[in-house]
Length: 139
Image (cartoon, rainbow, N blue to C red; front, side, top):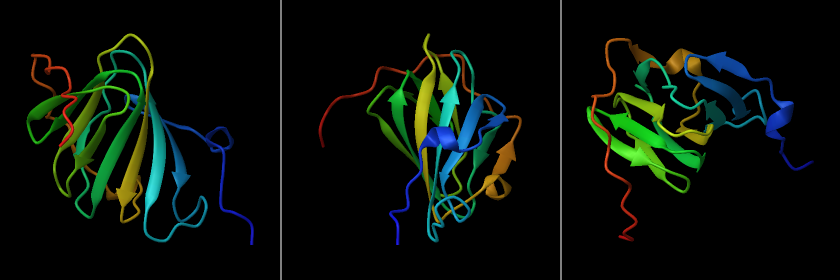
């Protein structure tokens, strides 16, 4: 048996509102049974649209590059490289690249998902104010 692995550049990219997405791990890519992972790239100023939730699971995002903010059930928090965010099951969320460089984010889903399992909220957007810089406190 070979080691299940793939390079992100070998996966077909999908252009979606506010992001470019590549599924890296799911039932079709690498044959995962209980999770899925994608990488997204968000251009400066873009928002991942529309706001959405995952009724059947959780999502965590890990910021690889770029700066911005997340909206989770009406609360805004800043993100930067090294930040990980949990989007609990069913909670409405969005991501916004407020920086001047491309944002690269790894998204982890459990159980595994696809775009058919998203619930969309076209009328939800970020409030006008900016979020405070991230706290670097260690719990």
